[in-house]
Length: 222
Image (cartoon, rainbow, N blue to C red; front, side, top):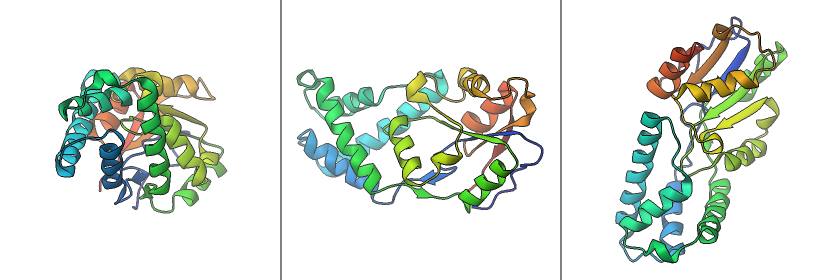
């Protein structure tokens, strides 16, 4: 992925993750559906499970963007399981956490593909100019705690001054409150808003959300 991101006229860089820096491993979602089906003993065809998972993944993401809130990962599991005729009253939080831990292991085995070209060199350029970086990501099935582990594995965490994930603050882009969190975490609280550049792929959640808040924004197009 080639970019024309303006480094010199900005002092802080806020990055979206999914479809900006990374994309899913081509086998991960299929493996996760298989794990989901076996772990919860779902008596439905695998294709039906896959369609249901995708439906709620897309729907919850849209709800989060429209309302500015955040539907919890475990709530997403329960919605899917309920539609697949699993008796969710027989489940508890420990069972859901057990599945999450297994899905995290799977995620870190079939880890995301970095799609931002020469990402370490780009981050080096930013840091060498004494500038700062954050991650600002809406989450769904994959929580912020797991994304941190992935970024550490990829030796990218060293470049990141702070992380903001929607599941950790119950706010999703384009809600201005999540961009306020970025501002609140800046080392230089007197930095003019337009010197903060948010980079992402979503025209509404990333570009419009950042611009409406007062930040500069760069829309990555695939």
